[in-house]
Amino acid sequence: MSPLRVFWHPFPSVTAALFCAAAIFVAIPAIAQQPLPPLNHNIQISGTNLTVSFPDGWSAAKQNNLQKLLNVTADQQGALDSTTINQVVQIYISVETRANADDALLRLRQIGAEGSSPAKSLTINGFPAVQRTRTIATPLPGGTALNTVAVPTSLDEVTTAVAANNLIVRLEAQLTPDESSLAPLVLAIGQSVQTMAVPIGLNSGSAPLFPRGRHHSLSKIAPS
Image 1 (cartoon, rainbow, N blue to C red):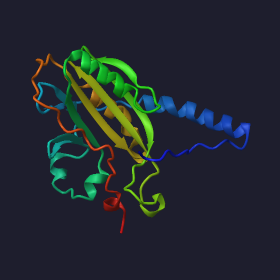
Image 2 (image 1 turned 90 degrees about the vertical axis):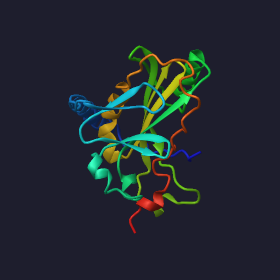
Image 3 (image 1 turned 45 degrees about the horizontal axis):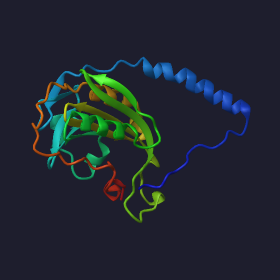
């Protein structure tokens, strides 16, 4: 488990606190008014009859048996190597097969209860779902000191999970502070999952769960 880090410190004065609160109050509506691009492309989620949509400038890829969406075009994907791909926003898609629909709902509740940040319950195309955005400490390889690699101290983890009959479809991305403005788009992509009726037993097994740490190989992205 990654160590917990505290980034908040008390304000030196009430005046400073009120100034910062006012700045935040003004900034939030401006962010909320930013229009999202149309999600005019879609792919089928492997092993299901579900689809997920994404906008221009993004593309789909596979990593072994894992599906993901990247915020680069298909042509740009070809220029990525093991270092530069970790500098691209990636939404990992996993599918987990449960015993039945009730078991899938139980698993959905477990996902919603992960961590200390509450998840929002909603319905996506008629199926129960949860979404959450939370700040996590940047995962580091064992024995690596944070000040020895050029990475942010924290990431925004954006999660969507959908219970589609006996399936759990999970989409997750980890955003650096410079990428945090993409969080609404990542949530919208999660809400685009087309959860059509899936026959029980369609999948014979679960797809491998995605790696938790986008920056699991931080030494690869640290500048030399």
